Amino acid sequence: MEHDHNLTSGTPRPPVTAVQPTEFVPVRVQRFNPETDDRPHYQTYDVPYKEDWVVLDAILYIKDHLDATLSYRWSCRMGICGSCGMNVNGYPKLTCSVHLRDYRKGLTIEPLANFPVIRDLIVDIDDFMDKLRSVKPWIIRELEQPLGAGEYLQSNNQVDQFRQFSQCINCMLCYSACPVYAMNNEFLGPAATALARRYNLDSRDEGSAERLNVLAASEGIWECTFVGECSAACPKGVDPAKAIQQSKFDTVNGFAMGALLRPFGSRG
Amino acid sequence: MTEARGEVEPRPIRTYRPAHDNGWWLRRRSYFLYMVREFTVIPMSAWLIWFLYEVYQLKNGAYEAPGADDYAFIVFSVVCLFFALWHAVTFLTLSGLILRVPIGDRFVPAAAIKGLALGGLFAATLIGGALLIFLGTVKL
Amino acid sequence: MTAHDSHTEEPWHRRENLRPAYAHSFWWFMFGNGGAIAAIFLPVIILVSGVLGPLGAPSWMKDSNHFAWVLGNPLVKLFLLVICFLTFVHSAHRLIALVIDLGVRGDKRLIGYGFYGLAILLTVVAAALLFTAP
Image 1 (tube, chains in turn purple, blue, cyan):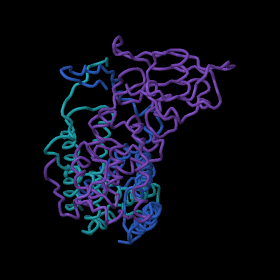
Image 2: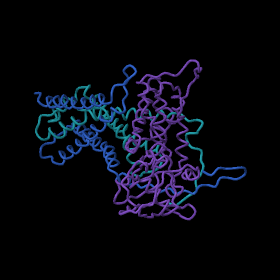
Image 3: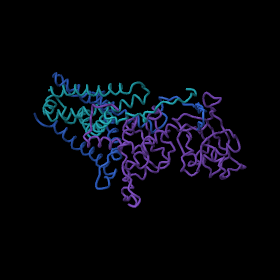
């Protein structure tokens, strides 16, 4: 399992030591064992309070000192790998980036909403990975220029067009916050669209037309009703809601400009 | 994920998927405000349907302008006006985020588009209001 | 809902015949225009005709003479028809999302036909009324 790869990799991790605390924080954790449970239940652990701990430290403490059976994913502890996303008091958060001191009276940790739960705090991310792949989030060139021709140069303005969308770390907090995805798992979703847009806006890329069939399908951008919560949930300041609405605008423009607007044509 | 090797089929993952709750929009302020934004179309359309009814009355020679004692109608209009303004502000504010108007290799800044849109609302309200009132003062 | 076994169906984004949803793009275009028109013109129309007028201010709808006189202009008829059409289509677009948000499930295409159809029906009624009155 991905969640404990750091335990087997031999890489020493910063110790989460047992402390002699004066104060405890009740941490209520959703548990689900697929071998024995039909539905999840909650278990509360009293975790020592430390001013500088993040929520992930509390989870690591539970695993190391209170209950070794707890399963979850984590890796970098610095808000870049995107593995430790969980719902904290109902809101999707990177647990390595929110402090325990903000939940001093206690907190409830659940797996990211809107995904099937595999075990405890681990969700099945296959659907997202599949959708991400479907929008081809890489630079597509019709013809690669030879190495000798040098770099593909970009102006600052050209980089500014897509820079914020390239900050996405695939943590899926936006899917967890999205009520449209909650109601319809077919929806392509925020992060996949943001990353598709990241490449569509890249002056080096020539793959917009290839991405269009997925982006502009019924289950693509049109499904979004612009609740905007994806952008509020993003821990990296990406604005997927903007990516989706601008994709709609550009798509409509593209159809109109290409004289392709066929109002009563096929419903794709 | 379990990896299939040789003849061994990967074991299907038994997962838990919580049921969707139709009251989701009551659970978070931002969700609720989104629903209010979507709801604004009902009072706006309702007012236009009332207006078409008045045109129908006019056509039949039965039109009577609502007066100050038509409390129900005035309250109805105030409520519709509130939601029409709610729609106007939310919709035009978001326009800056969505519209992309190119100038050279840049785009018109979102704040400028938003300002122009809200300015349009302000201008239409002033000029349109003056016109609709003026038309009522013309001696026929 | 209880735990269940995952199943493997071919996801939509791997379909061979995947094409952009042109109809969706058309309705979104109409939705956007309708939202802008309604946002800019409806507040002032409601303010003068529905609030200030009844409270005693002069208004184009203050009596049947004035109302008929203004409506007699074909450009006014056309302008009001455009407002009605775009606002109704805009409303239909949002109502489709609203009923789904509130838990209505079923064939989305059918819900779409229903609401867009109603918007077009109301527009036809509006055209008939505006162009035959006064």
